[in-house]
Length: 224
Ligand code: DC
Image (cartoon, rainbow, N blue to C red; front, side, top):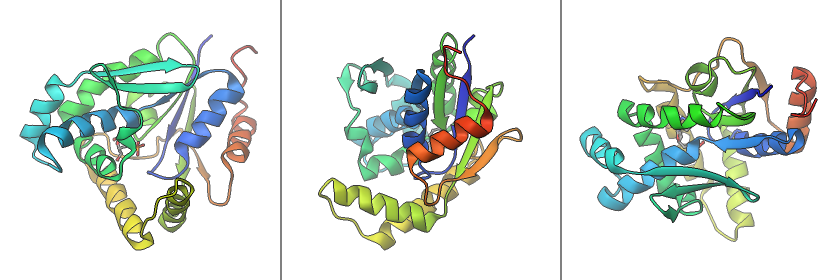
């Protein structure tokens, strides 16, 4: 029997690292849905720069081909035939992803892609509306939280590890702006599902958090 674990929460709460650990531990696939919005954000950015005009976004999103593949290295995302898995992580694409994700046409376009992934196999899927809209019948629902200041510190450390620099105040402001947009948009805002269990990831490692989720929610590996 296949099952789904839905993980939602704000940017930087540790969703993807925790979801990857869970998928490894349980022997199931990890689906990062934010990457799909990022591909559309990238397509819009390439053609129109930083742009929040819904007409322009719909026009570009309508012709954008998004593909999601899994190999031994994990998930790869494609804009038509181009692997853009690294490029979509740029800071301006984070902002664009947040902007395009508020457009109903974009959310509808990506809905079936996400549902299809969970149809025939067990998945850990992370995003903002997985437990509330994409997989409302998911067997396990997790909602991760973490104060914005700690999320900004983590982001700064990540940048340092990559040999990059960043400004803490700017990162904190960007995080708060994205939180506000993600939580207040009209369609599928970031919200805890009623039947989700909330975990605060402050001070926790991804491995520690995955362990705790498996124990507290009594999740079995695929084979059990
Ligand atoms: O998780 P992420 O930071 O890669 O997501 C990028 C943006 O996409 C984020 O600002 C919110 C949006 N998103 C969404 O609206 N719904 C999802 N299921 C996943 C991401």
